[in-house]
Length: 140
Image (cartoon, rainbow, N blue to C red; front, side, top):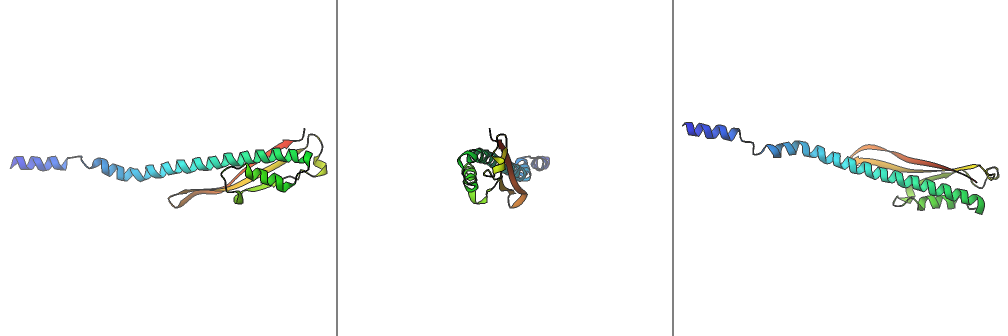
């Protein structure tokens, strides 16, 4: 009789399934956290591409003052420099480089590039908005 009672209490105190239960409780939180880090990295990569596109567009705008390029050419240069981003969603605004008042040495031209982003975790949109970068170059 005592032997049977000991076996029952030993079975009740057994911790064989404890790890599985703990992982079932904590695992989804860790997976969502990992997905959030990945989505944040993707958004940061897009921000770097937007910044590079603004820099390339600004440089092209300075060259446009010398070679009389159009604003559409500057916008296309910025969209081409954006790398792997969807060019149909990229917004590019340029202060007009062909304006005669901007042709003097030391005058500046500004190019602003915007791109929408969304951080989505398992169907929930955590954050969304627009990434934006502006670059200003001066005519030397």
